[in-house]
Amino acid sequence: MIIKDITNYLEELAPLDYAEDFDNVGLLVGNYNTEVSGVLITLDTLEETVDEAIEKKTNLIISFHPIIFSGLKKLNGNSYVERVVLKAIKNDIAIYATHTALDNSKNGVSAKMCEVLGLENTKILIPKKGIIKKLTTYIPSDNAEDLRNSLFSAGAGSIGNYDNCSFNTIGEGTFRGNENSNPVIGKKGKLHTEKETQISVVFESKNESAVLKALQNNHPYEEVAYELITTENIHQDIGMGMIGELSNEMDETAFLHYLKKTMKTDCVRHSPLLRKKIKKVAVLGGSGSFAISNAKRANADVYVSADFKYHEFFKAENKILLADIGHYESEQFTKNLLVAHLTKKFSNFAIILSKKSTNPIYYI
Image (cartoon, rainbow, N blue to C red):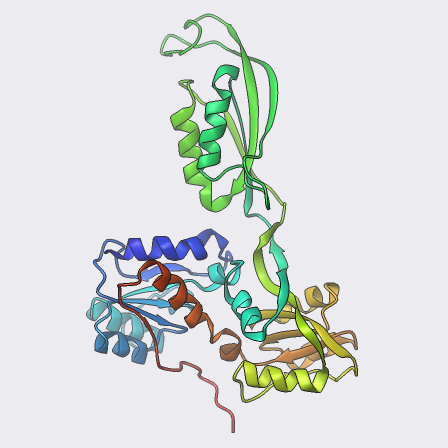
């Protein structure tokens, strides 16, 4: 088994196209064609993480956070990032990161938080834009059905709970080939009019190469005319954060104690209590202050995330309870999520959960 076999399956859960533009995800160190001896799952990749991989004879580290985030101009060991990369290369250990690709997954980081907290009726808090593309092409009407089916098989035409979705218009196409053309229909040098069907389908950006390949392989024309655009439509099943409901409402103090115990944190920082019941809970793993307004618009009773600054607690404005449980604490169960996903596919292969805590913050 090679690294690409592992990451291909992982990317069914967290396609790299889901990642934010600022992020650095995918294989950061190593070669996709390297044979894998075992996989170590971790939240962060530190020197001790590489040591653990060596000790357990695994040569692929799958990390949530990317060890290389901004560009490296030197590799001389002067920073912890450079030392990690150097040690990994020296010991032939590959490093792969999922980060915001998994953050934006319907079954990713925030979904795991919802599961741990026992939330029901969950949905995405901030659905992602720019992930849905639209293809429009033109084909002789006699060939339209075969092409549609090929596009559907490649991942096009799925909208929410529906598949095989397309829009079709009958019309006339005209073309004239020059002396170097080899037209399938009509003759070179002569204007030809053909009864054609215009087919429009939408698809997720992760399927773009497969959809275009299906178009080219199943279209009869020598030159295939098509239009491809990225839409501003939101995708309800892809995006940051989630919101759900407790099976039974709780008072605020009881919920905060439940949150502290369930999320295994030593500290919960929160905004002023509002003396109301908690039923609707919004969550977002990692640094989530940017989504406070989204949680308020969604009418959440409480928003659970991390890394809120002093002035950001004022944004509660007596409308919502803000609860900061710590960055590591909000994402700690991500390791378990990744192990469970990979073990389901590779049950007889060494998928190992790192036993080391990489949390750099301690409480007294």
